[in-house]
Length: 186
Image 1: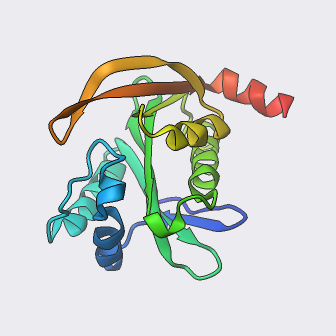
Image 2: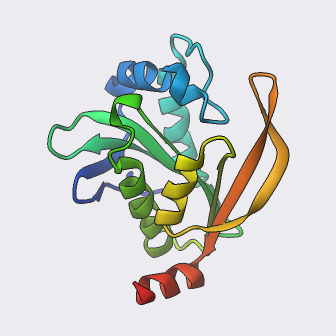
């Protein structure tokens, strides 16, 4: 795989995660409110986990199985979250996931990063479809996905167990053709 891409938006720089990012990742992702809205982030967030996660994301990119980038502010360079695509190269389909630290919620950063990642997936990675889901109790994430061009596809009832409780997963997706048509209509 080539070097990690860098994606610039109006306010953000999406870049490769660096080993030096680990303390900020642990602090932001380790906030219970962030962990509570994601399928895979634990709480408490164990020491060493951020470092291992960053290394695993490098390996996934090298194998063509995933692209995860740090979400940073262009103005300061500060890391505020992460966004990624889990890649299935054979079918050219990806699942998008992201998290943003609590101090940066409600600022439109997740939407800006998601739009950029969807565009990158279709225009640079040759994807044919991108999909994502969120917990039904987190409608703000659904608004992010819709603003990024994904379309509602349904609800998988009790599809995920988070901290011992079943969670309904609200599903979204968009094909390359639907995304291109949506761009032409906007």
